[in-house]
Image (cartoon, rainbow, N blue to C red; front, side, top):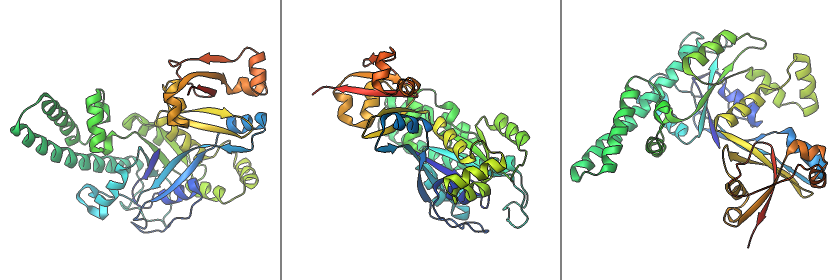
Length: 358
């Protein structure tokens, strides 16, 4: 899964990306310092995997991952190509979700492209530009589809035109099409067009250390109806350069129970409707990412496509029962083993063994 890190220039996107991925990327105090997107794969660290590994004496631990993409800063007029906007917008189209980084920190030495720090206004600028870019895409497709209708009308063409007209009316108002994606036809068309405003998103408020952003966060949530995460990207970048032991000591000194990065990763994971199930044995304990609501055969297919085709049944327990029972033997003795069939919906935290035919 790809999450694009988006925002105006100089809001701390690259600093956040570096902290997330521990990967060096250009961080500079001038607009468009980052032109080509940087990509980093981030482990979704899950202590449950560690516990399972300890019980099974696993040789290997494998976490699930999310991919973050550091996309260059957008500015007003990006949809018309301002600031190389068209190139940057194309990078956003390739992502599954968007993390909008918005600046709330005050630093006179870091230039703000609008001359003032206003997170609500900044977010509005970005969302309008995405809507305008989508409007161009929809109008282009609508013109093409109307011409196709002249060659010979069909129910499919009429349906597409109707949906495109609804999309157009929404985008002209500068609003997202996401709220319109109720019917499957609309969902498929938005996906085919790679519409930017169809993507789920959350907001990352990049603050100073200890800054109170509760009022701003509440206003963003009520105005834009999206999750909000506060981080101090500068501190997170410092933590990322420390060893695990030193990072923990530093967090304790700052009174941090968890890192802002953990919240960003978890929010992105939840936003995409993802959950985790586990497999555990002597060879490895591993986390597997699936979509919420997925049934056992499809979940097995994430391990190997043949597992879905040849699925017979699944032995399932909760990771807590696995840990308390100290493995499958204890799970069975404690009566916490379930044998599930093809209709079982896999839950977050399930530990599974799939029975496969030939």
